[in-house]
Image 1 (tube, rainbow, N blue to C red):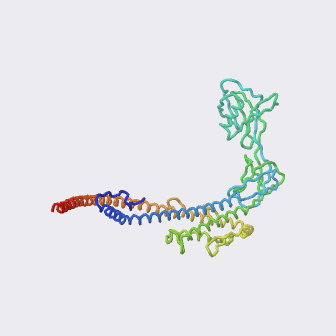
Image 2 (cartoon, rainbow, N blue to C red):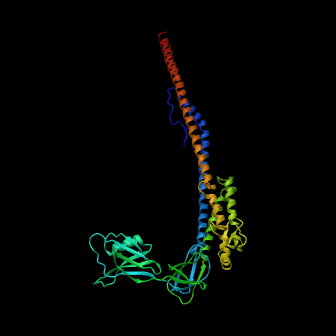
Image 3 (cartoon, rainbow, N blue to C red):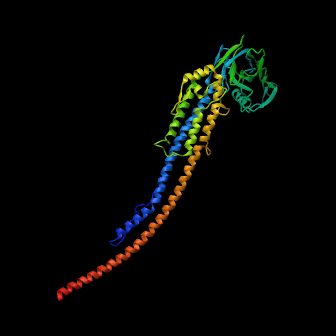
Length: 447
């Protein structure tokens, strides 16, 4: 918002003093506008504070992102599984996986029950036949759009796809095709499958199906399952492929490289936040200097860099390779982390913990949330305070400007009246002066 410190409406007078009257108006308006200039300077300062707060918010958001990457580095994607015989089974790792040795003997990988049409499927024209699907002895009505094998298969998959899959296969040659409808149960085990039209059965059972059987870690207990995908430990899923005469060994290890990269990223984000706060302190302090916000943020950062947890045997942040130097910056040593992870992997995992479960990640995540949480965080609250103060200043400036504009109009009216009076007096003076001069001239001529 700008102020009328100059004569945007020029005073037009008729007397010789009109320019002086204009100067009086301009000076009076300029003096009255000085408080507005001060308010505008405050507005500029608030804009600078907003910029500084936005910069800080970006730095702490980067810390939150770095913490998320540390969490990810502790998740299933950071683990590797070595399998002694990949032709018998494969392993998928997920959240909750831990380093360890496992073994699985595949007694029977199991089979899926199947059935096949008894003859070449010839689609009858006209309205769809009434069809029924029987799964494990339970019959269900099937609603098909037509009598083609593709149409019936699509109806089965749409209505009962969680229990049976239907496909159309050609058991003949390309020259003499023989299209049949094949059904397969979605679970292992002896599940009878039948498709019928009215009282006519259209399928013949091809495979009875068996459940999977396996033994974990030499327990001597044969476990059965209707699925080949088996969870043998938190975050460790085994996918059976073939029977094995002896146990298949599985070794789960965590890759240190992902965690190393994540901790290095945390150090970089932490140092950037420290540098951003340092700009608000010292000889060349910024616009947020002296505010308790800066002290609070610095304290929270310091708490992260010096975090420790008794009982883990890691030795604090330094044991992870994060060392705090005399300038308040973190330096990361990958070999220190590697040594800790090799000798005490469980301790490293326990020390870091999780964003919701405990350890460093929970402490750090809670701290950053207290800074960034929408509406309640330190930085959003400070930004809202600046915004509110800015709105108040805008209102004060608008009120002051309206008052000055009104004063200027009144001054112009007063000066116009004075100028008109002086102009009339000047006209009278000029008339009398001219009359007197004429009388003097006549007296000299006719004396």
